[in-house]
Length: 113
Image 1 (cartoon, one colour):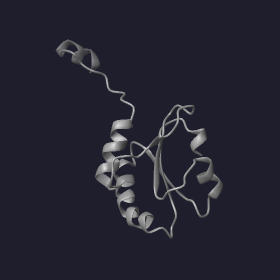
Image 2 (spheres, helix red, strand yellow):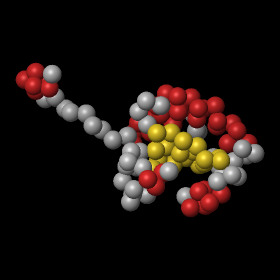
Image 3 (cartoon, one colour):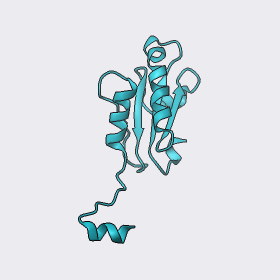
């Protein structure tokens, strides 16, 4: 699924029997809910999807990866400390593509409307 992407994805790799994975789950759900309209958010159970986790080089749990639009670019690894909804949101927001158009003056604003 991730290798066929046309837009960025955030994926959490977890094990359901891992205490840290269980602890992070409510925060990840909160993050996913906040970003559901602007970002693809998924999770992978590494007990059931061993091949997927192995091919993503996942060895610690939970692990969070940003898979960018560019399929040839390596995934970004979450590195903002505590995995809570606020930090996840900051991390994802910093990585999201910026499609905004800067408006330099009121003339540009009129053209834009």
